[in-house]
Length: 294
Image (cartoon, rainbow, N blue to C red; front, top):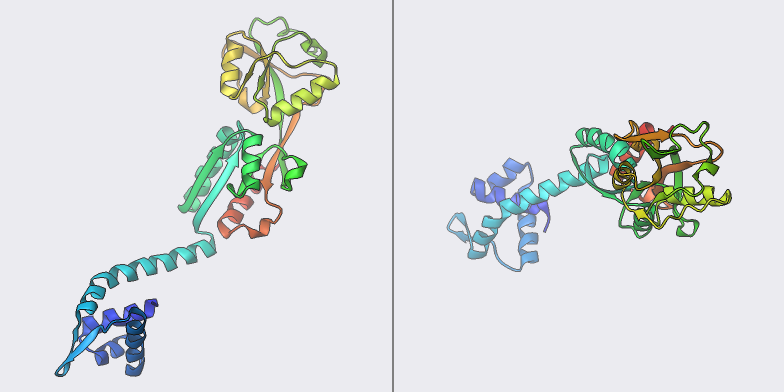
């Protein structure tokens, strides 16, 4: 069933004859007849019956008349949606992101982007790298803003910026006034870690273990916000992204750690064939590259 056939059928009923419908639609009358014949053949019923010089709807025709306007409206809406998807004005984007990028960097950008493309449906999933990167690999997310994926995933990684990690200390901790604060000063300290699979934790473990410092205290938490509260409560110290502790939470002090590289690359994690992404996804990728790349 084609939209033009429905349009022809509705016009015949509205105008009262094949001839008037042909005039209204600027078709040859033979074209009107063909459209009706095609529609009747597809549905397997007669839609019109001649009574004298007039064409009357059959029972099947009356049923189609009741539904045809709705079908046409839905078809027109679908065509419009398809055009908007092609132009990047509509569609669905499934995006993953790690914290604090999701809350502090990405959220304001998504608000701006959504105002520019109000018809786009956007789903943001927040989790650590071990959660969002495999979901990109599985096709459940279009792409993610995350720390680098594992090599065996086959995903591509495009660095956008670095998250610099800082030491968050309770306000009265013995290391608050230590100058300079060296990585070796963390020996014997209770270091509160994020959960396994977090890109920040991986960098912390690699850096400290290389210096002979054991970062494992037996306490790990899956939320940066909870870690900040734990430091406020003097449970221990934490190494957290600078953006997440600027300004420092009350009753805490932020220090830069000397003698160790604690930078975490964050960027676009996407399927190897980015060209397979639709126009809406490509629009958002370009927008994020422009506003996040440093």
